[in-house]
Figure 1 (spheres, rainbow, N blue to C red):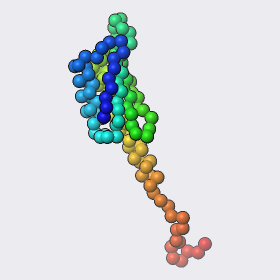
Figure 2: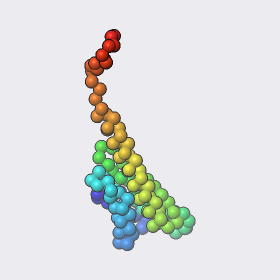
Figure 3: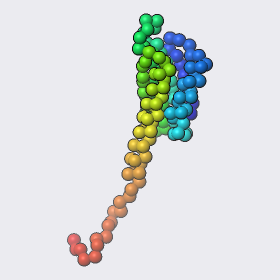
Figure 4: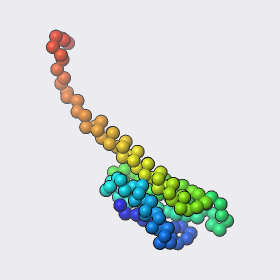
Length: 122
């Protein structure tokens, strides 16, 4: 899985980058090669004014489907990252489970001709 991390309005420190990568690998690593890329955008919405303004947006790229996007905001950027990564993991799990269920339903083949049980006439 390739991880792209960018900060909007500030530079991303090595400690912050390591935290994001660790949380994403923990949340998405169980899906193996099905997750191609995760793009993380970190931003400070209000700038120096403070408040609940640190946001984390994660877009997860899966094969043959649109990107799954989750966002979270908090006063503490690390908390926003943790919650967004956890939600991304749950969303990918649900998406892949739905795809597996739909795929198994499509694999069921109904024969064109079905013999009637003995003794029944049409």
